[in-house]
Length: 88
Image (cartoon, rainbow, N blue to C red; front, side):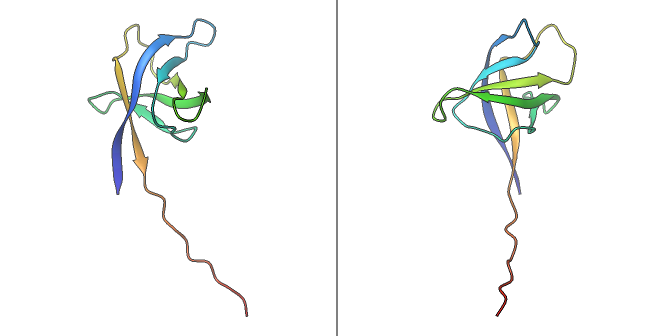
C-alpha cells in the first residue's frame, strides 16, 4: 500500500541548477517522485544534503513553472520483502 507523506517546505530555488531546495524531517530515496497538494508531479528527488535528522532535499523539477507551491509531498512505496531460500 502506498502512503502520501509530507516532504517539506521549499526554501528557495537554486540559481545554479534550478533545483528546488526543501527543508525536510524525513529522508526519501533518490529518484522518488515529488508532488504538490493536488497530486500533480513537480519533480524528482535529486540529492540529499545535510544531517540525517534534518536533511535538505534537492528536487529537480520536471515542469517549467515560475511559481511553485510552498509544501511538497511524495508517495512512499512499501517495500515487498522477498523470501530467501536457504540451501542445505
